[in-house]
Length: 127
Ligand SMILES: [Cu+2]
Image 1 (cartoon, rainbow, N blue to C red):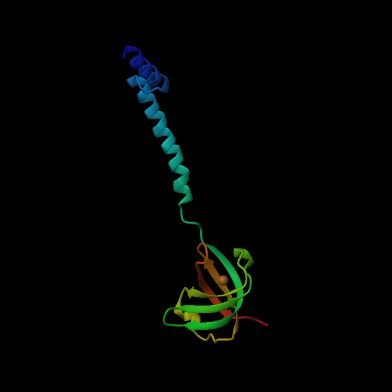
Image 2 (cartoon, rainbow, N blue to C red):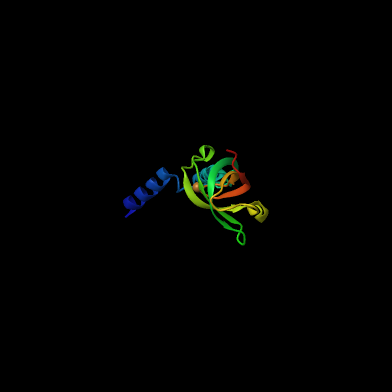
């Protein structure tokens, strides 16, 4: 019985959990580790900065009620986007005034990560 108990105590001492002072030291180190881990994680969760970009495309649809313009746009190098047909929210419904389906346009957009982008300016493309 005694032998077995001493062995358990020896193992605990070796692991640093048997003596209160050793246990305290370990707790302190663990807390420091958690803090160091948490800081980069919080930075990674920060909102990505929005980015302005420019595109060319053809108007495929206009929804003045929802403030959406559908554009079949060319590749947008600034955002690494391939050419595609997609809906864009516009910064103001005023931007849709005078636009016609089938019209070729130049536009500016504010990209906010992924495919989220807001059209901030749009005008007929010059020839
Ligand atoms: Cu697109």
